[in-house]
Image 1 (tube, each protein chain N blue to C red):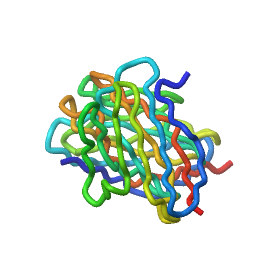
Image 2 (cartoon, chains in turn yellow, orange):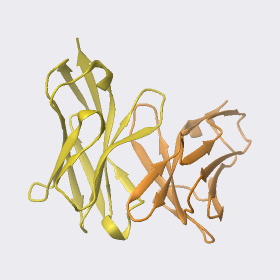
Image 3 (tube, rainbow over the protein chains, first blue to last red):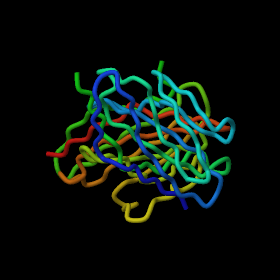
Image 4 (cartoon, helix red, strand yellow):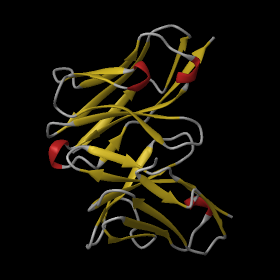
Length: 115
Length: 114
């Protein structure tokens, strides 16, 4: 079974500041991990994914995440926040190569970017 | 363009009626699709796994007689909300798995039951 915990339902940063969104997972099998962004009243957009290759994953819009097995974490970072980054972010886990399609989502983190 | 298309994007129906939402994979065959539900300002909850040619697998707590899923072809899965009530109002979104490790989401469907 898999589960995801996103620490902090709401994160607020200033424009230009570091963005750090936390995600911890639990999985009984080697996981695949994903970060999605959702803008108001829209669907999901994939930011990046970890599928057992490189542990540091680079995604779109300057985001990256590092898979740390020892910490069961997959935190999302961006060096410098833009106003356009304000959105809802979801971390998700799937059952690895045996069951990639079925995703379990975290509770979500709302990112607010202040001017 | 979209790889997975969902239709309709928005639908309003009366209480007691049924409404069907379609999820199509446009340029690949998807033996497995997934249906999620999202309440306002909440996360996505997996409802069921739609398997082509066989019965859907529902997550615990999801009423299979309420949410009928049919995966009649390798490119189409449908979710029918039967005897809809206002509490069924929600954002429904589907996804399709393209091996080995790519997941495509549809654009989502807003259902409002009045």
